[in-house]
Amino acid sequence: MQKKVLNLEEIRSLSDNPFVTRVSSTNINYSEEFKLEVKKRLQKGEKPSKVIVDLGFDIKILGKDRIKGITKRCRNYKRENNSNKVNQLQDENNKLKKQLLIYKQENEYLKKTVKQSKR
Image (cartoon, rainbow, N blue to C red; front, side, top):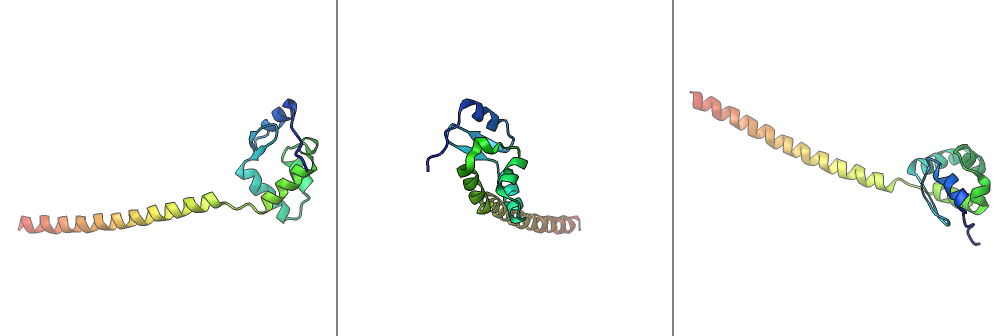
């Protein structure tokens, strides 16, 4: 099936929604917050059209095909980018722990050296 082409008025209406990150005559990009909220509500058993309306969208503008596509993508949505970020933060944390240990050892060495020089 062919996607519904959005007119200028529909584009303006969609771009006013805080859950839309980008919109053109043929594509709509949604925020991560939107995808997670839709996924959560669908898992609770809410109907897709109700979820979409509750989040400020007009069903007539989106059409049935887009709503089906949105719900399908949101059900399968995973926070891939955040897991990478968590891994990066864990790696950085481990490096900082090692660096802290080295500084502590250097500090202890310097304390001993100062004590010995005072004798």
